[in-house]
Length: 215
Image (tube, rainbow, N blue to C red; front, side):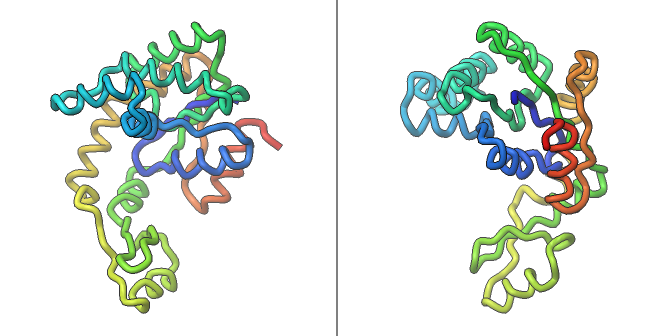
């Protein structure tokens, strides 16, 4: 199983990818995690990336592509992978095509996590972390008893600085401008499968598995 998880911030890509990883035994691959690991371990690519970041520049698509290729060659990816949040642009999609071609691999599907803008805003602006327990909650979607448990334990519901409406609206605008064009790109290649990504986590996972033809 070789798939790409596509969707706006707050669409649940990461959550569903981790559940699928656990169920199918193939790795969830996030370029952010790849980059952090490579830098921390001081790999050849990690050292290059660190130098770029310390110079105040963005890590190039070429470096990210090389990291992806290296990751695909790891033993745990022999049976497939779940790409979470990559590619983000048409240029990165072409880079991915090149990597897959070099390795003699093909994508099985691209999953679009379909969520309305209203729900996305509630998911993102409503995110809170309990200062006492560290548990992630949402003031709109978490059960009242879970919110109360944080307060009863002496904790506060803290919001990240970048979870304000202005910052979130900007992130969604960037997605629409840079990443949304991938929807038609992969639809044109017959790879796109759309999953209704609103509702309970287990219900969404069931829809995702159905879309992938998994028992």
